[in-house]
Length: 171
Image (cartoon, rainbow, N blue to C red; front, side, top):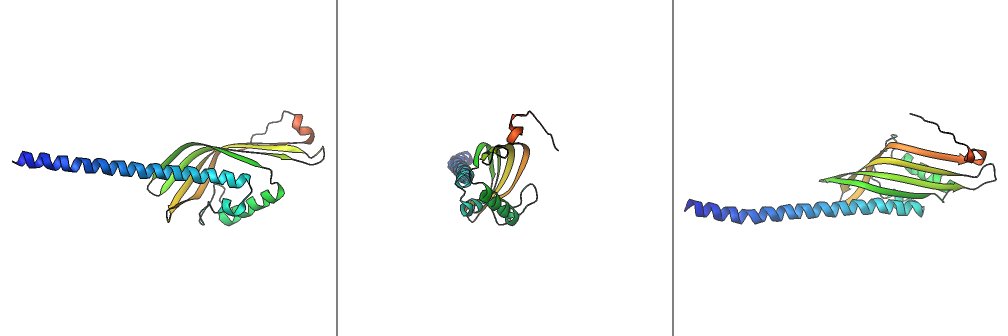
């Protein structure tokens, strides 16, 4: 009789635990999709220079790898976009890991801009980086809380230097 009761309990509990795993997996996949959409919206807002919507993707306690808080970072973005609104941004998401309300994203970022001026000052800017973003789910919404560029290559080619093969390496 004990075997029958034990078998019955195991059969009763097993589907519940499988359902629990399925629900947890579904919730995690929904979070991954939400994080991906947030980062893609950042690119969309940046390419349209929609400052308010772009900055709204960041948490109020954001600090980047250079130690800039959201206030300083916002001013930098605002100043850059006032100088040149033709910068084109892109990302390639490599990996998203979600653990409860924290997400870590490995991605490649790129930016490109043509700078118009007279022949001596016109040029182009290119940047490519490998970065890690940390996001936090706050009140049901994902926000960027930090980012760190692991590796970055920037090209600034102006005037006569556009045709020179000059490479500088800095730590």
